[in-house]
Image (cartoon, rainbow, N blue to C red):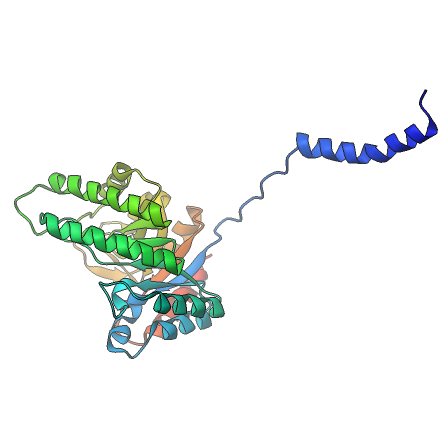
Length: 298
């Protein structure tokens, strides 16, 4: 016989049971990611002269980026005084502390390498360099480290021959990247891989989650570099925006920054867009104008 006490106890538990059943039967839907949740950075090469002369430090550059409203900075390896040797933890962690104070990420690092030389010892040395600097990148909290192809000066091997060892070396580097939690990002640099199809082919052949693309808008020599950008956009892990694009013969012409912004927006990219200026003049003013023009299109 069901008593009043039993009824009251059951009634009290009913909302809890209904809630539990609802939670079990209808899991919470995943939140929709806001489109184009872009983050912005400045590449250190913009201040190449100032950083090499000592006129500017990484700290100075970081303060400028914070004032400009950037989210991050790109710290290129060869502006560290120890390069190619790795910096001390004290130096790296001071940069991390400064970035925290300014509300910035250190999103990107980069080294210089040449994987298209037939000199095996040289390529092996560059792989060791990349491995060491991937560890540096991890300590800084960077999510991606830029590598190059290098320039081909050999006439003894075909381009397809060179691509074979290029892919092999990238695969090795991708394994190093996985060990340190940093993506190895190929920057197209108008040196060996000149078309979107060539770049995509290499990415597919390496076939690793830890190997990706730093899409350099200013290094796609083509009759229509914007179409090349569109082809590469699905593969991009990081974007470099410069004040120029290149024609088929590698002549530099002014970039349509608003058009580039729309290409990135239409690709639903969710990561970092970095600005790099190579012009003579007031670099800070140039970067400020580039950033403003780009954002005005979004």
